[in-house]
Image (cartoon, rainbow, N blue to C red; front, side, top):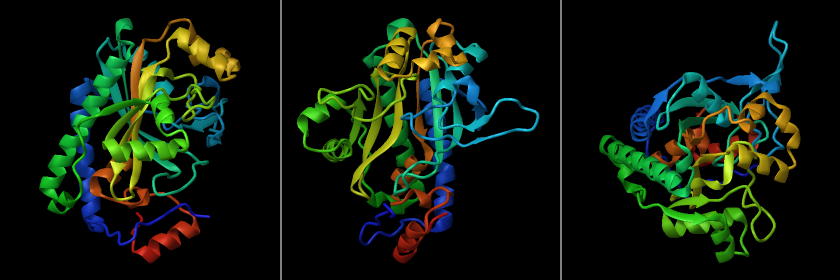
Length: 337
């Protein structure tokens, strides 16, 4: 059963080729703004990593990576889910200093993703990571980075509206970020699901950074799953905007202060993942051989949807879809790339 829903009366504001032009422009604009605001240097990134390295992102711990063999290579290769761990190791290899960081294009395959308006098996992100000092491992540092990202997004939207005036019918993104915790959302809307709470918060505030994701709330369940070995669950969050086209919250970024040796030790035990301590990446981290960092991923297709007023992620990226989704989109006149 397809989870795709096309809003009644929806029509794309841009033609098929105008959409392609706009995507290219917004990516160039946003990359420049992002790298300048956070002092990031562009680097190359892997499409796949060794399964034995422990570098792949385990997401919620149940998703199956795409794995394959390579001629003359002993280790099994895994297509990345994200570069959350790889970036931290790369910062050590590049010998960057506190205050400096990297960003890269990340392309991934998430074969178990439930397909709908916002989710695809193909994932494209700007992945970024920067080194921080011990005294910067706090919520204020995280909030400053969030505000810088939101500023880059609003600047990009303003320029796009000047090039494509038809986009001016879309609401302007709110540059005022409301910082909330997952526990505050549960306390306010205890009868709603986590997704419904996000929808309610985004509708009320416009731009929301939802903090504290991964650990159990007072209800006993986490707001959402997070792997225990990259974000510190007390110092992370999701950046949400109200999507006026689909009438719901749209998460465009997941980010956080990364685990220290102490918080990794704690979270591995809480998550029942103590076996990961034997993996090369985890050994380095637990022994203090990797720099303290913060970082995240910013969805390129999600940003394109938001700024161009698209209702389906397939309008801004090329992927594969089930027959029911293709039928629904064709009947509604929605052109998938």
